[in-house]
Image (cartoon, rainbow, N blue to C red; front, side, top):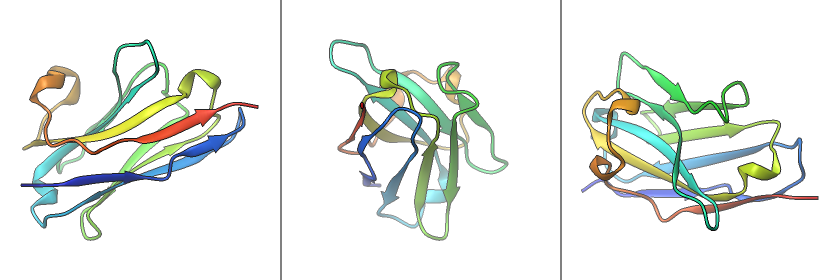
Length: 126
């Protein structure tokens, strides 16, 4: 079973940047499509960005398009979310999740993703 662990969260001022990493435990990591989700207090979980298996296709929510970038390093078993020009509304717990095979993220239900990481807190505030 693939296991995922997020890191890189923290407190940052508006306009700042953070780089979140999702480290995987197994060497069949390249066979999984991956996604970043976030959940703010009192709000529904939001799908932020995704990346398929090769040939890579990525997806971004409108709320982060142009500011966030996903990448993956299959040799290092890492899935990365680079977040720039952060806003207060980007605050939340960020989770990475995986789904087997080459998937186009917007067509996949949240409930079909698994495994999930434990989450990392991102707080954007003065």
